[in-house]
Amino acid sequence: MGGTFDPIHYGHLVAAEAVRSEYGIERVIFIPSGNPPHKVTKRVTNAERRYLMTELATVNNPYFYASRLETDRPGSTYTIDTVSEISRICDAGTELFFITGADAIFSILTWKDARLLLSMCAFIGVTRPGYNKSSLMEHIGNVNEQYEDRLKFLEVPALAISSTDIRRRAEFGKAIKYLLPEEVETYIKKHDLYRLDLKDFDKDNAIKYLSENLTEKRFLHTMNVAWEAVGIAERLGADKGKAYIAGLLHDCAKDVGQTPEAFKDIGVETYDGAFPQLSHGPLGAKIARELGVNDEDILNAITYHSTGRKEMSLLEKITFVADAVEPGRPEDAQREIRAALDQDINGAVVSALKRKFEYCARKGQSVHPLGREALSYYESLKN
Ligand code: ATP
Ligand code: MG
Image 1 (tube, protein in one colour):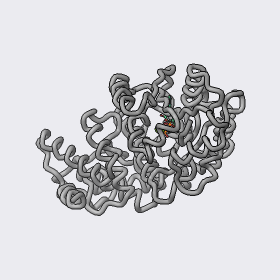
Image 2 (tube, rainbow, N blue to C red; image 1 turned 120 degrees about the vertical axis):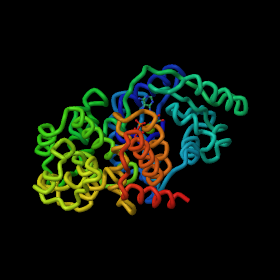
Image 3 (cartoon, protein in one colour; image 1 turned 135 degrees about the vertical axis):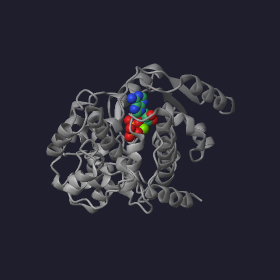
């Protein structure tokens, strides 16, 4: 069973055990992927640590083993290389299965040397919650017509656990107990693996300010955006701590008085009377400074989160997009912007800007010139 295992959790272990007993498998070897080559965008925990967690998670199952095969190999590894290596080590005639999530089964024919790979081992796709079984069965049927039933499928007890979710919980100091083996949990705590690095930012004080100054709905939105920004930053290899702070504080001024007077009182020059609904950006940056933020990039992300602007920094784009895709937003907008984000962040910015303009049009509000400029700038980048 291959995976990033960042960290390994009960979803992986339950799935592997179900496959083992169903297919009478002698050994399940968990192979955490190695360190990714420099250019990939997803930031993962050091391969050695992921291997060690896998070892810890598998110690008390006599059929389970952890392998360093990919850990010790520099650069990225293709499944075909790993399977070839395993088959070389095994006794002749050993039957090999590759256990994987149903998500991977869909892309299997695009893997390197797919035909050869499928001739060397069968693939067992296990479902996880949220997978559409009928389209999976159809896909497996189609592939199996050409590949001698090499794709198999097993429904395992639904465990809605993912490594991403565990990391988010650990980053935000939430409980991860019962989602993964205790030894792994202890290892994560001991080495402080996923905690966000917020430098000297006083998060509790900021959250207290937000809970006292935002409506309940806005407070929830704010926490969602912080969470979302961390996830996007992780995928893009950006600073997750900064993304968290920018997301957390982006709307900190939204529910304080937005009158021109209020702006004068705090000495914000950028107030634009024609767009009162957008003034909470610059005003928010002012409050963020008072809450101890002095990083210019974070302050800019807050200032421009509502209008957007051309030539945004990566952090500004992350904050802008996170605000548009958080789970409280309309589902169709989320889907559209997330799909764009899977391609690249600039496309997601375009998509989020367009959604925003549509919203303004429906409300009879005019669009801020900075936003208009941003749209034509990011649209021109796409071509
Ligand atoms: P991430 O959230 O970082 O993608 P993950 O939880 O999906 O992590 P991976 O290391 O990517 O973990 O998973 C390795 C394999 O295990 C994948 O093929 C994945 O689909 C499968 N898998 C992960 N979680 C579950 C689960 N809860 N139930 C069944 N299979 C799972
Ligand atoms: Mg995954």
